[in-house]
Length: 68
Image (tube, rainbow, N blue to C red; front, top):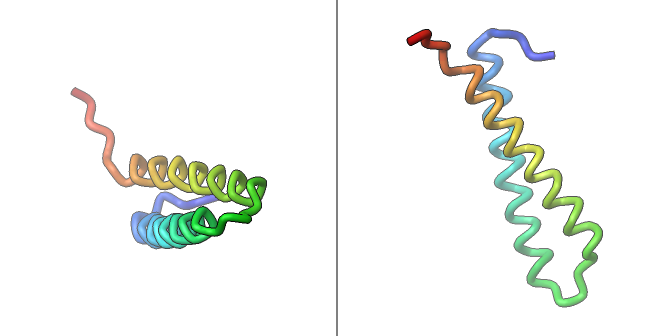
């Protein structure tokens, strides 16, 4: 699992953002193809949503808890 080291979290966050962006580009290219594989497109979209959730989770770990 991930450590609480902020530098490690930032590195992982950067990796996930790059993968998310690359996946977004791949989905756009696949959509442009009239004979695209719908199953592959659906799987890519699910992976992209999973990445988005992981990115949000990591971002929340980088923000310190503030007890108000």
